[in-house]
Image 1 (cartoon, rainbow, N blue to C red):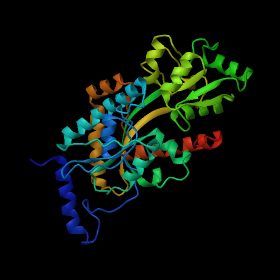
Image 2 (cartoon, rainbow, N blue to C red):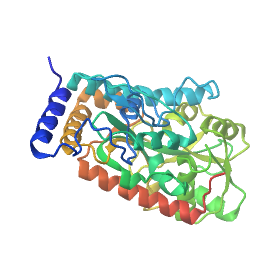
Image 3 (tube, rainbow, N blue to C red):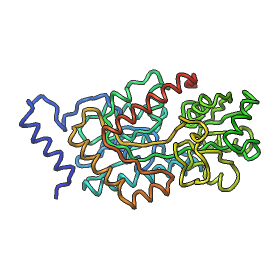
Image 4 (tube, rainbow, N blue to C red):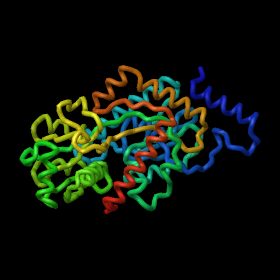
Length: 366
């Protein structure tokens, strides 16, 4: 039996043979297109993990998957980092499995970490826009668009938004010995002690860094940025008292919070998190503050519209499934379904927002 995907591709080929001259583009033409895509690998990566996108040919009839991938196999990652990325993989694998079942077509993961995902992204950008390559887009891509000034691709120009997937909160945490127990108390302490609070992050340009810079700007406080080579090291020193605060993915910090090793002051999203229902949102004290992790699917910009629409429909069907919602929530995120147009608008707003934060804060690659 033919799969839904094969039927869709066959329909496009038939239409192309009628409407287009022989030299025109059609789904199988290996044309190089600049596109920052959520390679299916990233998409599957989305179903499996997150770090950097790249191309992987897996044979005819199998979907090439390329995308940012932070995987758990690297011995250089600490157990905590590994656990965090494995959670990414589990969440993203849910959608990959869903699409494989719906299309009768295997979605294959191809993880290529490196250079904060930019090397793999560039590889995906150069992939054929044939419907067989997707890309996992995240808030990190929106930040990188401005943070790195010499990229060989343009995030907004070179990606065709397909569908959003999930959103999740960060959390502002301090060492339990820190005197402030609320956001107002923290701001008051920071203003009374300018430049004396060390703010840890997983590295320059990471979400933990930029979430903190956004807080500094809106609250009008001065904190010293202390970058680490990853979130695990930052959390270790925060627990040890070497630094005072960080803005961390909630999935990384929640066990430390529950064990009393860290004190949560507020979550970074507009609304409170179901994982920490008693912890307020920063925006309750600082109107306009919002920072959330998000993942979505993109494709090379010239990918046939019919295929993009089909993917959007099936992805949103998966996100509407009650079991899928529950499993995503168990991993610390919320299902986030949008139309193609809504996702495109969201990506543009996020890229503009973080561009301003990067420029005003003076954040630089180190």
